[in-house]
Structure formats: C-alpha cells, structure tokens
Length: 408
Image (cartoon, rainbow, N blue to C red; front, side):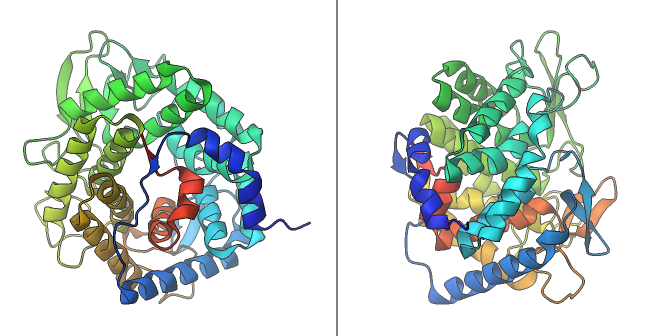
C-alpha cells in the first residue's frame, strides 16, 4: 500500500517533536524571495527530481563521483554514503512521490555495517542525512538506534589530550593520529543528536570541545582557513596547519570553508554559544568577499590563479545552506541574499541540463585538485546540498522535519 508523505510526517510527529523539543525554529525564511528567484529554484528542483527519478532505479551502490558523466560507485559507502539516500529523501519531500521514499530506505539500510566503524570521523556524513532523517520522517526506531550506535563509534575517536576528534586512520594506526580537518565540523551534529536522544551530555560535550579546538586553530585573522591542522597525539600540543585538498597550508580550500560556515552555525544552534556564531560569521564574511561575480566558488580562494580558476559547485551548494542558517541565526538579510544568489547561479550555470548522458544533477565540481582527482565532474554531495538549499527556501517546514533547523 502506498503511504503519502503527509501521512508519514503526521505519524512521525512524535519522533520529530522528541528531537526538536526546544526551541525556536530557525527556518530560512527571513524575508520575501523574489518571484524570479522562486521560478528559477523551482525549475532547478523540477529538473533535479526528474533526473533522480530517471536514474535512481539503475543506481547500483553509493554514487561517489562521475566519470564521463556516469556515476561511479562505492559499495560500502566510503565517506559519502549518506548523501544518496539523503538526496532521495529531499526528492520525496519535494515531489511526494513514494518511489523516492522506498529507494531512500533501501539505500540507507545498506549502511548498517558502518554504524560500528571506528576508523573514520565521517559517521555524521554517513548517518545524519540517511538514518537520522529516516527516523525523523518515518518514526521507525530502527533508524534512531543505528544512528546512536554510529555516534558511539564516533566518540571513540576523541583525543582528550588535544580535545579533538581524529579525522583519519584506525584507532591503533599511528599515522595521522593527530590530524584534524575542517570537514569534521559537519560530523558533530550526530553527537548533538545522540545527546538529545539519550540525555547523556557526554556526546555534546565532546562535540563542543572539538568545536572549541577547531575555533582556536583554524580561522586566520582574515577569516580564511586551512584544510588541516595537526597536533601531537601523545601530548595534544599543536603542530601546525597543513592541507590535503587545498592548494597549500596557507591557502583556503573553498569546500572546507563551506563546511566551516555550515558546521559552526550548526553547533551554535545546538548550544547557543555565541562564540561559535561569531566564528561562523567570520568564515562567511571571508568567503563572501572571495566570491567571483558569477557566485560560483573557485576550488581554492587563495590559490595563485584565483579568481580565474576552476570551480567547485559543491562548495557553493554547501555554503548556501550554511548562509541560510546563518541568516536565520543572526537576522542579517545579507547572508540570505548571498545564499539566494549562489543557489540561483548554480541553478542557471551548473546543472547538467545540457547533456543527455549525465546521471547527476550538478556539474562543475572539483573533488581533489592537488591530486588531479575529479576535476570538472559531478559529486553526490553537490546534488544533495543543492536540493537541501532549494527546499530550505521553498519548503522550509519540510526541511525542518527532515534535518532539524531548530535553535536552542
């Protein structure tokens, strides 16, 4: 029997209320959206949903990126496994087509073994858009239980000496044992979820300590950030900045900057700590100032060829979502205005709508420029965050049910 989105959301209301128990909802809407912008975003969402509907039945794993415009796959999810079911959930919210709900659930189930994975910090990326969202939208406690187990796995990566969550490597692997990366800011909300659900403050305490450490070592005086910061894992003493996906330790990888904007705003929303909000604003102000007139970020804001450099549309989609959050948290319309300009630019200049071969929605992405890996390709998180951003504008109440836009 087919179950409509509205019916499921009604039956899941208890689950949603349990997580969003505080608060004032920080929805994206802080002012009217120009009619032309609404039309552009709706046309982009229509295109995205039609593309996903056509491609989804043939998806044989977790999309990682494209090669010759066709998805390549990971079978265990790598670090990106949460984005495909998350994209399907966003498509369901927009379209009310139960095919997307069924596919989202089937895809998310394949991540079940990863809830016990202690070798990566990416458990938030894996389980927040997939299992946490599934629980919020269906009320099925299986999803909640698995997400909590994933949070238990994540806290094992916390180093109390340096007060950070280790990014990479198995717990018994000395390589990269003191390495912290900006991306981890986006994994902290899984811990906030676990703390809210269990009443155990340890989860949020660890998230806050990591965020405070990141706040101390990543932002430069101008608001730019490196991708990496290393510590001595034995003593917790700082070693210094580095990079893997940016141009250099002194440059500013645009996707990392976007993770920071979104992540620091989210940890502010979960704690009310205004220092986190100030950090999010500092990072946002730098990134906004570094945008080129076309409002599509280059892959690194401080690489020598900026502003005439290859683009990363995924950084733009992530940044737009973070700026919508930041506008709601601060009441500053300028952040929302830039977010709408970025989403409009992505919709007008970065879709795959000129290609009959393309299986993804968003083009013009860059995965790892220094490694010459994934230049001018499509990436699954670009598709996910573009849809999330558009729905934050067009259907903020539905997005709030899926991912919790509340603020304490």
